[in-house]
Length: 534
Image (cartoon, rainbow, N blue to C red; front, side):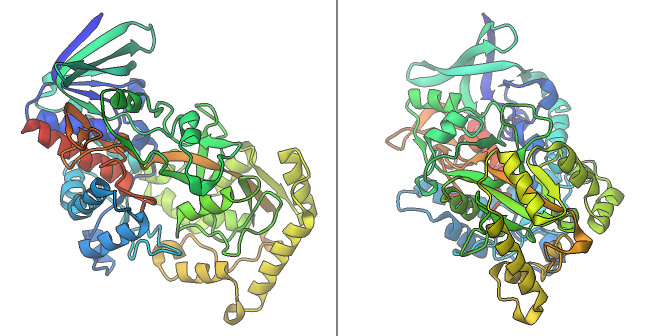
């Protein structure tokens, strides 16, 4: 049996695992980092991400005339989280993140050469509950790929790299106990099935959440969302399956809030899938009409993204069938269609300024064409009857009613035609509000009718709920030590990143303010490493 020995064992090679290793090498510790995936995708889900990070009172915000504060940010966080009286550690982690994210995360990544897009994005503004009072979503120039690759380079170039043992294709299945403390782990190599064993004084679980396992997602589906949809697309990491969560529970660790998830409402099938049910999360076009499975406009509060992602999922899951349609036209798609993540944002990912400006000024034509030609969930037509016929053909039934679609589209277009002063429609009011902020205005149509002859063809997008991130997980204290059911630390065991619900077993509560995931990975990892070093 292959044996590994070090002072610290890190299980998982995502962002949280990489940061933990970097910090521990800074302290001269010997580290073994075992990752289940292949070396060419070192970095986990963070590598595939868009790279948005939540910070408070940054130079980017100040240059845009904002004066943010930790008090305001914490107020927004707690409003969205809806913490209960029992959420002691999640609330403490929220306070820690808001107060430390700029000095301990923003300034820390800057020293590794990470830069941010000058315009801060404004997401999760809040709808029925206040959300982000100010823009706080700082986009890494280069996306999550740049973030992880720069840290990986730093890891390999570290002055103590000789103290690092890095192995890929290693599946850890269970933790090992010795004398009442966690003393290592064991598992199998993915390729040949050979067993291995790793021993260490401290073990850090950095294996991500549970949302890559549809069985786990369905098992822990939140009660607010009724029953799980028949189709749930996978937008998480394929190995985020909860294996180590169960092992932590076996050695006495407390798992909490596993029903808290950050899923997305506008998922489509990846045209070139790399895993079963591989889903892409669209950034839903604000000027598109969002319809239910029958073609009826979802309401009475129309669905518009950017305010409360969880509410979008809730309202779709409340329908008899939990999938939806967005109806738009080519002009709207060129201006507004976007897909979250590094893969479908190559100009930002590859830091191509002219390519980015081209897409802003002339539209994402390459992206629209790719989706229209290769994604099974897109259909086009030059009239509503033809579009509805294709929608039903795609779904394989007659669910979509032409009368419902025609009523929704005709009424919406007629409201626009009455002029700005008489646009008594909540979606149009939201669009007017969004266009007041320059970060949204450049990617948002100005009251675009759906049946505009100059904007054809019509487009319908069939959208599914997409599993993404776990907001719950392994309960930890502010040193990232895993806590048992009585609230005491388990000697030798730590959890960081999404495995720990990004800190405390649920730092976000019921909803996230977005951009807090990558930052939570970094902060929880740094706190774990500092605790181990002490």
